Image (cartoon, rainbow, N blue to C red; front, side, top):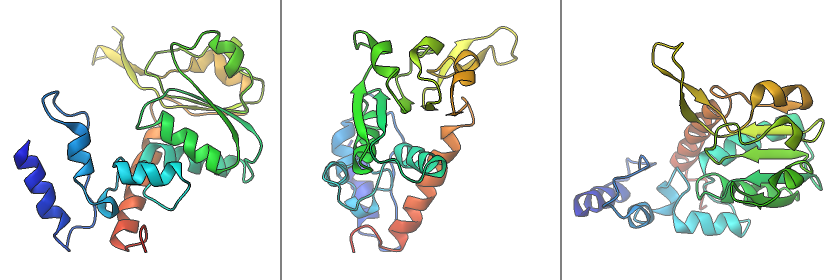
Length: 216
């Protein structure tokens, strides 16, 4: 633990280093929050530190977590004006669900957060103009849970057994893609949907950190 904190401290004070990220998840004996919060906020290109999370919730300029940032980029390409539309986020993680809800609120959308333990989940998801799902529960969202013409972003990626593949498994999203897709105006596939946008957002965050754009 101390070795990791010492390394981060050296990188923090190295002017040739613009961005730092910690590959998650960490081993259970390590204090994830302490490690992430030890990164200088302006070098925290994942946007997970308490300072950057707080600034996001306050609607201030900050480093935005990469997956939510990529999702917002997708949604803005689909619709330049998201104001007033109903957005439902299914999932409450610190990495996707909570920051995603904040980003959509900052776009003046009407946002609700639900999760895998929400009672009567279909009742809520059917009201969504935009539905973002990030629970890690394969095929949680069925066709009868989706509004006609909704835009759906599937963040879930779970390995499920598949004897027909050499690997013995396939990647499965949180949305029953085959049956839900005909009802949607837009839906992201798994794999190949949100993942590439997450990588692009990380590169953009790193470039912005190098240009000192976040806290100037």
